[in-house]
Amino acid sequence: MDKNCFTLVTGASTGIGRAIAREMASRRHNLILHSLPDENLSGLCKELNDKYKVQVLFFESDLTAKDGPQSLFEFVKENGYRINILVNNAGIGFDGPIENYQLKEIDDMILLNIRALTHITHFFTGELKTHLESYILFISSFGTYVPTAYKSIYLASKSYIYYLARALQSEFTGTSLRTCVILPSAVATNKHTLDRIKRGGWAGRVSALSPEKVASISIKGMFRGRKVIIPGNFTNMFFYLGRIIPEGIIIGITRRIFSR
Figure (cartoon, rainbow, N blue to C red):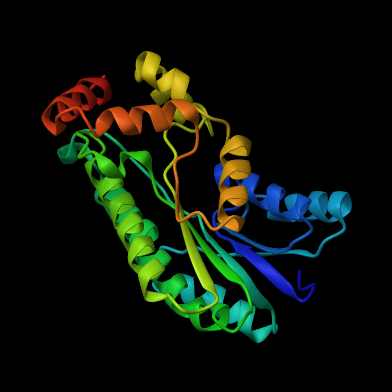
């Protein structure tokens, strides 16, 4: 492991991003953590530095702003930091009937989940390819596989992430850069997601995982060269059931679940 290199994690203040930061620090990787302003990244940096004796830096910006992704890239380049692992975690999701969304909610999902992620990947790919071994980790969703009512825009954006990651896996053939895409189901990150898990009934409860469990499975799989990871035994079971159940039935089931 190169001590002069850093893992860059976007959306690192909460949930899966925060758990991945802790997992990487426990593996003695230096970190650059990103989040929106005023989300106490300095406290997380101090905690990880004190516990694991690694360099942990942070940069705050709004990635939905026009120059948000570029400002993150310029911070890294101007300070001479070298990135050998990029974790594209930052994302946001809203649910409900499409006519009930606020325009800002629609814009935020598109700008963060699609535009910012794509720009960041574009900016850092050249640097990543200069290392003997490097990775991009994408966070998609298990819902990528099913057109789901009341989560239409969010899961459409996650489908974009999945197909981008899979295409880049092919594009990077013959280089030192590997990509991995994670498709978690329910992740108990905050009160909103806990309420959503409860509304999902038995299937939602048994497939739910903690952010720490998702992070552990994801990082382990990434370093083992896995291209696609579906964390959790129950989620994997649902995936294989979904391959034999007609799509129309699955769409009907998810519509009833998320209409609650």
